[in-house]
Length: 113
Image 1 (cartoon, rainbow, N blue to C red):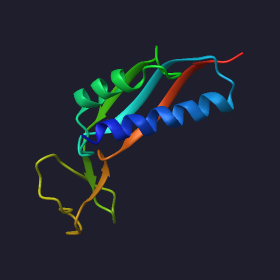
Image 2 (cartoon, rainbow, N blue to C red; image 1 turned 90 degrees about the vertical axis):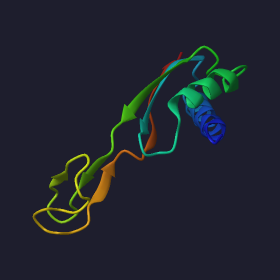
Image 3 (cartoon, rainbow, N blue to C red; image 1 turned 120 degrees about the vertical axis):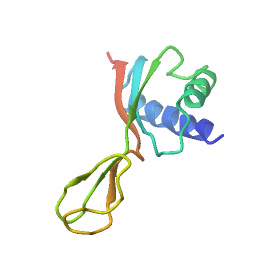
């Protein structure tokens, strides 16, 4: 279950950001998880609830936005439809994954003096 190591890294990063700003509390975290990232969102949420105890994130909500996979042509930028062959119909170049594999901390809502 690599979700626990992801949550551990997330809480460590948030702790560093909160300390740098002398925050007294963290209220909400927003993350984006790509559908091809290999992260199970429900397991991530469970890991977060467990791991946040006795940290600055103890009372912070975790908001997760799932990002759909999106493929495009690296040459012309044309989008490749879901379920289509992963090559550009115009250029015949193999498609590249434009988004959908990310694990990104988007926002930290914290209380600062």
